Length: 236
Image (cartoon, rainbow, N blue to C red; front, side, top):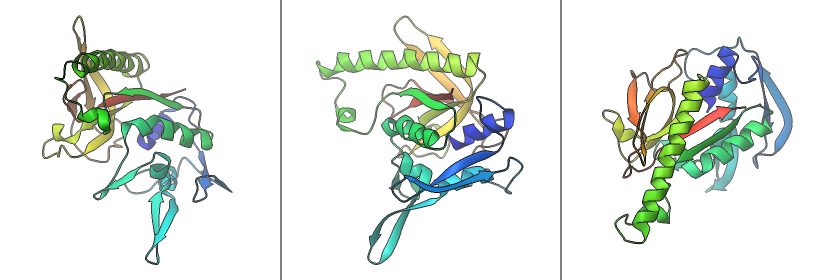
């Protein structure tokens, strides 16, 4: 999300201002009373832009064995949990958490989207069971058409990047134990009578903001048996 907001800021899209003001949080994520405005010209050598570094402001979670435990502000807002060396955000938490964070900071965009499944009890249901199988298929086909519309509208009509979620095993040397959110700038759809096969290409984009300097990779977003996949639009 932060990288897409930076794309919008650089291109002057969707009302994102050149100088961004963030309202710093208390540990419970309520407003601390302090705001910081970062000039658009402020740059750092690599990584996130300087204004976005403030989204990593540490918020205290608890104290264990005399040590304070912190999480990054944006991760805590999205209910992020520690997964190895990374933070994991479940698809169900992405849009609600992002929208709260955007609203708290007075930014004029909101997140809408769709995802195939989440890591909950329903994920473990066997799709071949006669009762759940047809229900799962209907849910799946509806998801593919919703994703089709999001890709066409966001990347196709509005010429905006979309956020896509995919199993990182789709990238060489990736691991299927991890999910990854990334900006996508191109899409391809193959429409059948009952479902849509949807693809999106993730890469560094014009601004070179991808966290990993890989070349264009086409991601399949309609795998019925994938761990999870999804698409989100960030717009007014």
